[in-house]
Image 1 (tube, rainbow, N blue to C red):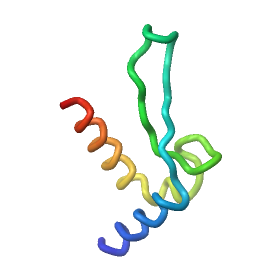
Image 2: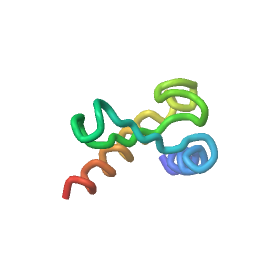
Image 3: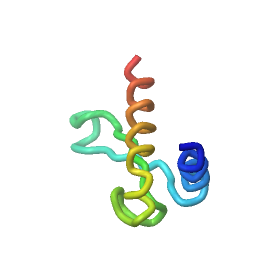
Image 4: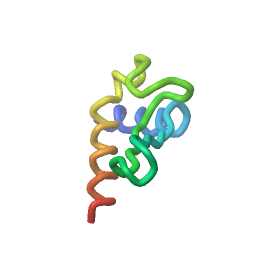
Length: 69
């Protein structure tokens, strides 16, 4: 588990980045949605994304929970 988390921390710093998504017209759609994606690719692409999907989903849910406080 420790190696997995260390691998994710490295991948998060080097391979992945946060992407902001907005839907609808300004002020008329849902609020901003942050997702983690591989650099220069849409979310869900690449073997790294599939490998670290549980950690990515955990990080996204923690970020969403902290913003909704």
